[in-house]
Amino acid sequence: MEVPVEKMDEAVEQQQQDNRGQWFVIQTLSGHENKVRDTINRQLNLGDQIPVYEALIPESKVKEIRGGKAVTVTKKLFPGYVLVRMDLYEDFLDDYGKPAVNKDAWYFVRSIQGVLGYLGNAQRPPALTEQEFLDMNPSLAGDAPAPTLVIGVKVGDIVRIKDGAFMGYEGNVETIDDTRGRLTVVISIFGRSTPVELEFWQVEPAV
Image (cartoon, rainbow, N blue to C red):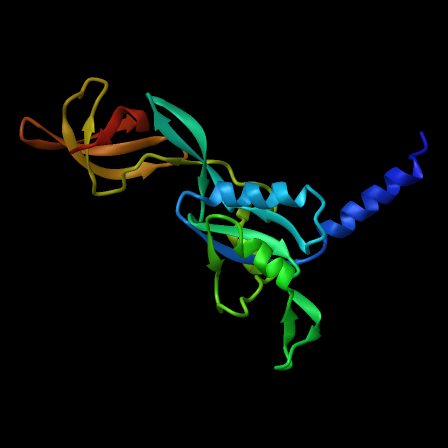
């Protein structure tokens, strides 16, 4: 089936837009990351002629134990920061011989409620290199890594066993096996240190 010319033009235009701009790091108020990202993207969808193209939050998926079950949740890798793809600098130089700042793009981002400013030089923030961008977004560097299981304890912590034959005992975490979702806890039984292997969900941090 032949694709209409106008559809092809739209696809080309979208591809060109996707390749424009550089990534800059924007600092936000804590807890306002989603609101800032959504506000920027929503405003851009209105078709304003501003050289700002996309906003995203570096995130990763992790597994947590909730109610005795492993659930996958999304965690922010850098709380308090949002990445914005934009043309912040013009093609011509300013009075100091440096690329002039595009004031429309600058003030558009700075005017978003919850934005504290650009990361880096207050007047001339640097753009991220491609490698820096990928380092901040590992899921975009290739195949997305499998969700990591997070249990909130580490080797050496004291935990309480809340299920199984040793329920109520407390002991030190000796080893953690993220792949199998198990850990070894050393407890005292009849005055002897005894290592027991448990599922992640069977323990909780001792208060």
